[in-house]
Length: 356
Image 1 (cartoon, rainbow, N blue to C red):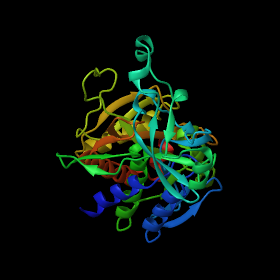
Image 2: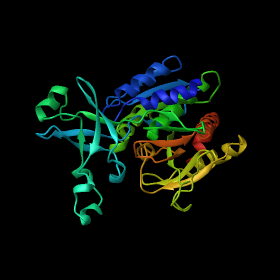
Image 3: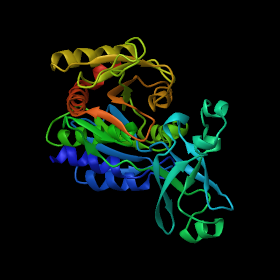
Image 4: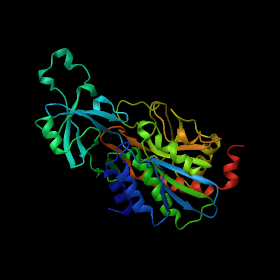
């Protein structure tokens, strides 16, 4: 396993639901402290500052550290956990999935359960089981036993889905691609810029609580005060049965995706065009998509102060917002190349021209 692949495994295997990203930020700091200055804002977002040949402009690369997960809401008298989703979960992907309940006494394995279909009336079997009717079984026989195990309301619950390469070794399967891939991207870009000139200051920011309202971007952008912003994300790969190209055109292995529209932002047109021309000059294949059903950290970055030219660049990923996603190594490597090449073009004059 090469160094980059090892990093992708390590960063996705870390547990970090919204509000509980500390282990992720500690990993990023350990990996990046030799390459840049590391700081944090008061909400917990980590800020990795890499100075080039000029103090300005400031380029913000944002990838959010949190993954979707759950929080313990209460423990029933029988010892089962009722849970609060953290981030957007589709009910159909939850049942029978394994989870880890993180308590002050240690990690507990569990499984998401509900009433078995064998005992349900025929009409009820046809209905979708909702999150409200689900619970987490940790093997406790009572509320008191669950408490002895260490379970308390507010404990985070994370999907259990270790990193794995597939039969096609370029396809990588893991939890938390959304959005540890964004964190990995700015880490690799900063590492590569360590031996190369760039006419700006680059801030790789691992934001917190994106999945519950873009909260980390709201505070960290105040610390960075960027002149331009790039949100580094997943995009929705639609290369699977039942999805038409007009709904999700991105495909694994066909390059990074330029996100033309999402629920929180329309990108700066000149910055978008600069990314497209940069990809062409560097012979990097790119794709285009829209994500009207979701927002990104760029939704907060682009409205900071008088406005910040911003763009979202995504790595196509299947099955986001579930226990396990799949992406293509070539797309990741190409995205690193694209971001690095784009940063080298973002000097003061170029960034000024984006808003003229």
